[in-house]
Picture 1: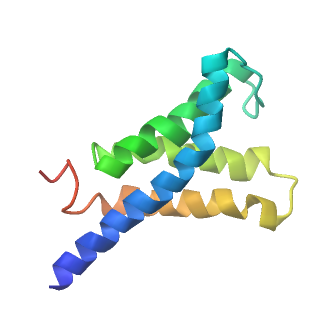
Picture 2 (picture 1 turned 30 degrees about the vertical axis):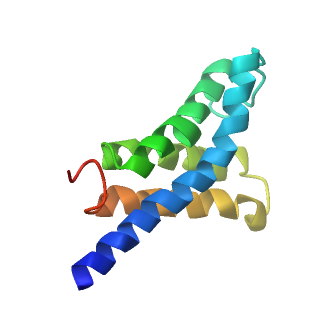
Length: 124
């Protein structure tokens, strides 16, 4: 019984935050589709590469985390994206502004450490 509850908890930990992060990645993806590559450049690699990396970290990888495919590896880009958002992009902002990025960072770090649980493609 406890193992089942733990696996349901891991599924919720994977699915809910990933679905929430997708809502941030979708507008960025739509920018790419429309050809608007204007975006911040927090790491100095250029606006377009930063936008593409943000889409990978906020849309592509969270979709794979939801289904539980290569979960630990797919949680790394969202964690890195949120680290950049919290520590670099919002560095000068108050904690309330960067708090959401830090919450996502901690959640994806937990997914990296705990894995996907039983209810995932990885465990099939």
